[in-house]
Amino acid sequence: MERIIYEFQGEPSIRLKIAKGKNQLDFYTLGEFSIIDDQDQIVMQKISSDRRWRIKLEAYEPAQFAYALKINIKRTLKEAEQTVQGLIQRGYDARLQMVGGLIRLNGEILSNNTHYRILVGQFNTAADAFSYGLNCFNSNDIEVVHEKIREPRGTFEIFDSEYEQSVKINNELTIILSGTENEIILWDSHDDNGDNNAPLTPKYYQWPIRFCAGDCGGILAICNITLEKYLQGVLNVEMGQDYPLEVLKSQAVASRSLALTKIGQCHHEEPYDLCNRNHCQQFHGLSDYAPNIKKAIQETRGEFLFYNRSVYETRYSIHCGGHTESEFIMENGSAPYLHGIWDGPKQKQTKSLTDEKTVAQWVTSEPHVYCNPNGKLNLHPENFTSSQFRWEVTYSRYELEEIIYKKTGEDIGTLFDILPVKRGNSGRLIEVEILGSRKNIRIKREHNIRHALSERWLNSSCFVIEIDVGSDGIPLNFSFIGAGTGHGVGLCQTGATVMALKGESYKKILGHYYRRGKLRKIY
Image (cartoon, rainbow, N blue to C red; front, side, top):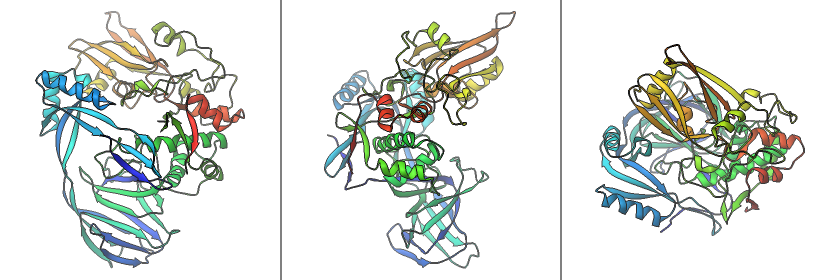
């Protein structure tokens, strides 16, 4: 039975992770603030201070987990139960886990992101789970996941820079501002790895902030923020003040709709709904926003894209490369409304980009599409460059062998070739086979392919490979020649910008990238 995970009255609010991993965080406030503990008891009240304050994690007990193999994801309970029964009949300790649920506003269902994870086994460590999976399943079809058994615990000390005021608090604390116009300035980096030497920048917030111990150490900071305020921070990072109003409005609708569909499925075992990184949507606090950003949000307030009475999962990427991708290349199943499209005013692409010969021609071509910075539709802001539209990266064989070992943990020996196995309709690879002297390995999903074949990330998985071979027939260099930046699903931010500069409305932009979607204002 489906469950209700949120029941909103009026504008939704979300629990947003804003910092994670560091053992101390510094802040100061503009205006009075109070501090409460995990029992909602006031431990410091109406403090007025112009000093910098510090929250320090003094003692820590990590969360406890059990580990399992995630074999599959199903959208319906019937499919999930059939899969589990099949695994049990084959002798596996299989079960299903429901993730997500219903989100309702004023009694109306807005979103249902319920899905079922198929899990096998229960292990004390991730290594044990993975080792078991390698022996029983194809390594490309499994993923180790954790299930939390016990929450982390910690002791915090909060004190001012002169150490004249201090208090110790167990488990968690919350800073509450006395006035709605007051602000908390939190020093943090854009890095989540717990590196205390990473550059720190001030980030501005206007809501209560809860501080607790993270699952694996460090301080976790969470704020409750209304959806429209959240969008101000998202648009400021995802686009910025120099974009045309109509493309900002299309981004506002896309980001608003996407946020609602992600609640309950991306961080279902965490004490927050969304993170502030690319995994959900980027958010780096509040600041003085350009009038266009505020206007775009105000003029689309409460507007969402719907498909069949549910909010549309409005994915977007930086640069589709001339053709968007269908949603099935993503990890969490398929969406019937996200189909790849030609990113131009008229459909001209007739040959399938799943064909290798066609893809090889495509990645070196200059199609007449919105997102081509070198074509006749060259109306881009300066920050859009041809390096996002068409690109090339070269590694020596030795470099690529080391990268593959570092990223996959597999020692393939001498790298002979990388073969395309399956492509999506934008030409993006969704499965490759790597041929080595010791072993061959397969990598599935565009995200994993981009990660495994680059020191950082390949721009996209829409690429072909040219190999420079030595006199002995062994490869010397591998050149990746590709198109686009990002996964390519949904709205192409570059193409949408050109459409806006050509005078198209945000409704026309949304209709171009999100076919079969219906725009509705719900608050």
